[in-house]
Length: 184
Image 1: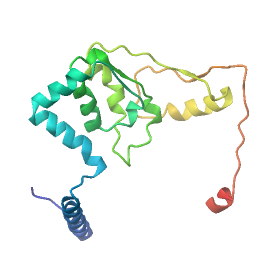
Image 2: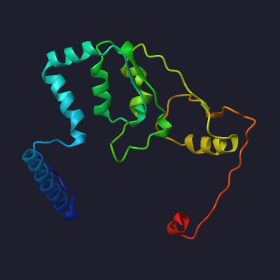
Image 3: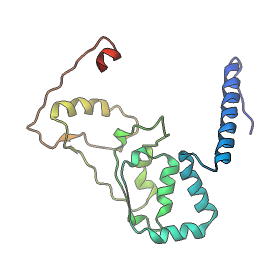
Image 4: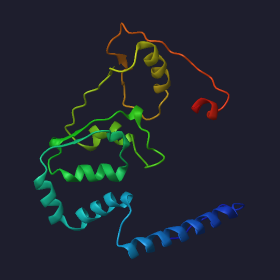
C-alpha cells in the first residue's frame, strides 16, 4: 500500500511513522499475551463468518430473534455483524434514534445505518417514537430547534413531543466563569 502526502506537510509523515510504530508494538504485545483488543472482536467474528460458512450457519440456527438497542451507536462492522447473525432478517428488531448518536468520533458509530436500515433490510417496518417521557415542553422546543439542524436524519421525522404537555417545565441558563467553577 502506498501513501501520498501533500507537499508542505512533513509532520504527517512523522505522525504516520509514529502511528505505525505504535500499531506494530501493540500487535506484538497482543501476540505475546495471546489476546486481542476488544474493538477487534467484531471484525474477527465477521471474518470468521465470512471464511467459515458452517460456523455462521450454526450460529444463525441458534438465533431466531434478536433485539438491538441503541443501533445508532453501532459502526458499520457492528451493523454487518448483527445482520449476519440472523438467517431470517424478519427476526431482527432494532431500536435507536439517529439524533442521539454520541459515538461517531470515539467508536466510528454510523447513525446513517439506522436511517437507511429499511433499505438494507428489506420488509422493514419503521415505528417512529416521537413522545418524550422525561422532558417538558420548554426543553423539547429548544431541543427540536437544535435537532432539526442534524445532517443525518430520517426523512420527514416529526419533532419530539412531551408525553405530558401540561408540564411546561422551566429552562434556566447558568453561566460560570470557567469549567472549573462550573464543576465546583
